[in-house]
Structure formats: structure tokens, C-alpha cells
Image (cartoon, rainbow, N blue to C red; front, side, top):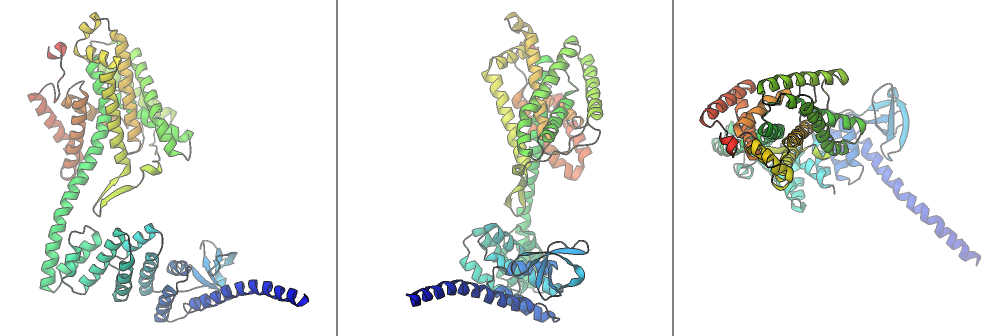
Length: 531
């Protein structure tokens, strides 16, 4: 019985001892790998880097990155450490083998493992190769991107093996292009065929170098490939211009559609419309101050809040000024221009004359890459979708609600609408509130594209009137078509004419168009309009 107990005790003691022996062996091998880096010979360090890459140690990438950043150092006691922050005299460090925090060490007690430019290039390539074996798809894609133009003879073989086992099509395509660039640099004419149609900037650089080389056959093939790529780039630039034009046009639609409603129903030239846009933008900024750290929630809540603030301001303007100036358009224009100046100064006094920045939420940051030459920024895409949603909501209100029916009746013939029992005064108030609220929504959208300031609305008031006149007073579809058209036209003209001259050209075009069609693209219908 005593022998049996002793045997079990030996077994229990042997298990933890055996489990601890393996890490000790691993640490010994790791120390040998790191010690091979701590030599004076740069070629020897290069060989040590190759051994670390081939070691399959999960800590290899961290060591290589720390060596590239100059953070892999050796302490006076012989330990290898990674510097976490190299500011000040005492630096926080961690053990390179275990990752354990070791507190702070004086920089005098540390010796940096130096590298030269050749080793830096080798390290970048080595890290990229290590990342290609990662289970993280995003890391593999980033690694494949970095290898474009960086492949040499030593990397070509390992890359070919990686391509055979890679399942992601995007990673495979990038690695094939990286190998093709290497083959092109070696003078292989067949490599040009693998690079045809690629819009990546590094591919174009490689083809340009080949086109200016000494090999006439390779140069001709590279030039032909570049000509095809240039044609594709022109198409992508046109698509990018169209996208930016549509985003600008969607902002113009939001800014002008409320003006189109009030102008069509009441015949009021509201010069304070731009300041209603400004109020919507400042409402978004205020919501972010109330909800710090939650830009997404603040933006969502800003949509109803911006509409409500601008609508209430519109009602105050209509009840306080406009109702007393009906039928006197010139006096209404001057009065609303004065209101716009008052609102601008009020914002300068209560908030600040300085511009304010509104933080875009994470889901509106970044872009969607269509290809290597074209990407669609998410904030502009959301603004376009938001403008179309607001437009669709207004169309439903005008077509499916009693208010919409009354607005259309008053727009077409105010006297006849009154005789049918429609309270035109109530319609005026609600219409002005609706148009002002939509201007506030335009401000919410603009806050995601530009800084918020007291003069924000002044940049869009003239363009808004041009959209209304060009599309047809009081017509929603005319406002949509005119806004998007003018946005695209402005974006097309600006690169070669400049921003100011482009606006002048657009203004001249609208003046000539109005001479031909005084009532715009989509004129109003009704006896009053025809008269």
C-alpha cells in the first residue's frame, strides 16, 4: 500500500514538472533567436530575421515589428525587452519573451538593436509574409497590399506557396499582381498580361518604368497596357465626378425644396432661409454637446430636433413679420434679409463666431472601395439617401394628406381655395413651418459634410433660389431634377473653370434658360399659374 501511494505521488509530481519543462525549452530557443539579432554584422542580422520568420513562433511578428520600430532592446542584465513608450528618461518596458510588464527602466540601462535601410525593407517584407499566414482576413489583405512592388527573388517562392493555399479571391489577386510586378522588373513580357486592367497606383508605376526601359518589346507591351488603364481611369474619374455632383445636388435639393414649397404657396422670397439651414446645423452640434461620446445617437436625434427648431423659427418669422407684408414681395425680401442678419448675429453672440466641428459617427466614416481608383465616401452616400428619403416623404405628404391637398389648392388658385372653405392663413402657417423644417434637415445633413458656422446658410441661399427658378416654382419634382442637375454641372465645371467662374457660367445658363422657359422645367398648373 505504501509503495502504491509513493507511485501515485511520483506521477502527480512528474506531471507539472513535465508541463513546465517544455516552456523552458521554448524560451531557450527564443533567446537563441533573439541573441542572433544582437550582433554587429548586418548580414548576420538579416539571416537571423529569416530564421525567426521560419521558426513558426507566435511571438515572431511582435519581435519583428518591435525591431523595425526600434523598440526591441536589451537590458544590462541580458534580458530582451520591448519599449512601450520612449518618451522621457525612464521608459516602460515589457519582457520580449513573456509579454510581462517590467515597470520602467532608464534608457541608459537599455541597448537598442540597430538596423539599416536594407534590414528595414527586409523586415517589412518579412512581417507581410508572416501576416499572410494569419487567420485574420483583414490582416492578410493588408499584408497583400503592402507586398505590391516589394517582392524580390527571395520572396517569390514563398508567395507562390501562399497563393496556392489562399482562399480569399482579393488576397490571391493582390499576390498575383505582386508576383507579376516582380516578373516585370525581371524583364518578363508575359507579366504585362497579368497586370492589364489593374488600376492600382503601384501597378501603374511598374508599367511606367517598363515603358521607359531599354527592352523595346517590353516597353511596347507596357505602353499598350497603360493606354488601356488610362481609358479606364477616365471612366472612373467621370463616375467620381458624378458621385460628388450628386452629393452636392442632394444638399441643394434639401436646401431648396423647403423654399420651393413656401415660395410656391405664399409667393414669399424668404432671404432668411439660409439661416434656417444654419439653425438645423447648430442643433446637430448642440445635440452632440448634450450627448458626448455618442455621435451616432446625437445625429439620429438631431433629425427630429433640427426639423422642430427650424419649423418653430419659421412659424415665428411668418407670424411676426411675413403675415403683415403679404402682397408686397420687395418689402418681404428686405424684411427677411434683415431677419437673416439678426439670426447670424444672435448665433455669434450666444455661441461663437468661430466655426464648430460636428463629429461624424463611425458608421458614416470611411468609404466603400468600388475598385482601386474609385471609392465612395460613406458620409456623402448617407446624405444622398437622406435627401431622397426626405423628398419621398414630402411627395407622400403632398399627395396623400389633407394638408397636401390644401397646399396644392392654395398654390394653384388661392381665391378659389378660400371660396371652397380652405383656411388659407392656416395653410400658410403650416406650409411655412414645413418648408422651414426641411431647411433644418438640410442643416443636419450639411453638418456631416462641412464645419458649422454663422455664415453656413449664406453659401446656399443663392443656389437654392436658382434651383427653385430652374426647376419650376412650387414643383417638387422640378426641384429634385434641378438640384441634382446643377450639382453635377457645378462639379463638372469646377476642375477647369474654378469655383467662382463655374457659378457664373451656371447663372448665365439659367438666365438664358429662363428667357426661353420663364416658368422653369416643370411649370405650375392651374388658373392662377397660367394667368
